[in-house]
Amino acid sequence: MSALIHVYQEKWFRHTMRAKSKWLAMVKKAESFDAYVKGIASVTGLPEDVIRASFPAKNWADFQANADKYVEIWMRKIQEAHAKRKWAENYIRAFKTTA
Image (cartoon, rainbow, N blue to C red; front, side, top):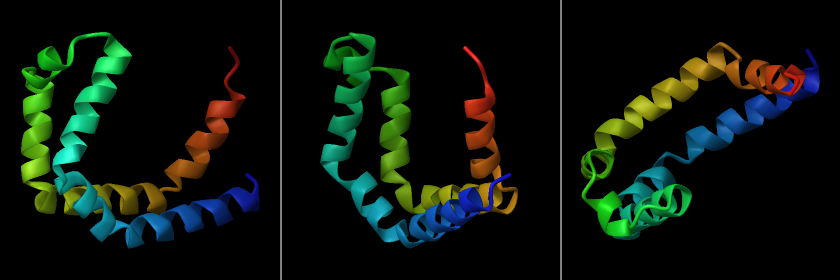
């Protein structure tokens, strides 16, 4: 495996770990839920009011309200992925796959 991809993985990891406060601030913003709804609506073609009333949207709202709890899970998952070099390995595997 290329050493360069591991350099980029380290850079990704350091950048992501420093982003904790930005991540929390972004998730907590009211506009964040609106962006979620609009994004899902644009991908699915469903009306925004249907998305807002959906079970996944209610889960997202809970996620947003409890972002302080979830940021620790997010960081732990990233640390685990970094320790296992999952990003680099999965990136290379994705490009080895043929269509």
